[in-house]
Image 1 (cartoon, rainbow, N blue to C red):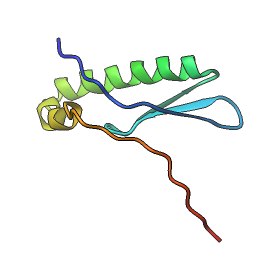
Image 2: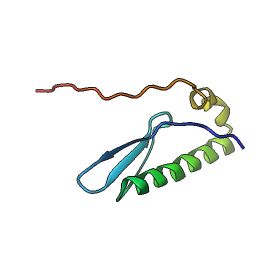
Image 3: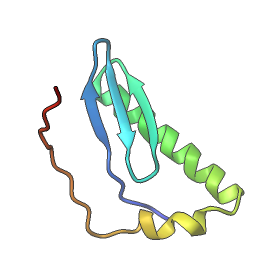
Image 4: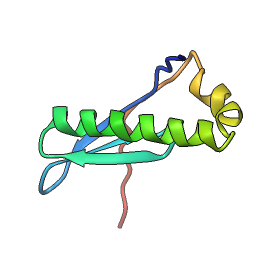
Amino acid sequence: MQTFRLTSIIWKEKEGYVSKCPELGVASAGETVEEALHNLKEAVELYLENAKELGMLEEIKETLAAEEKFTTAIEVACE
């Protein structure tokens, strides 16, 4: 079994929290931060299981195995 270290981004919306794994484009949600993270982990696991079954896991392994990852917040204006 392989273990991958992925990024999770969680933000508050009007009702609940949204969680996203940007490496895979997988998202989920929950009523709390903890629930949103738990649901995201489940969604990512299902995504990876399906990718493996479809023979696509090898194609995305380089992205999953990236050692250096950077996250930051940016501020932009829009009129």
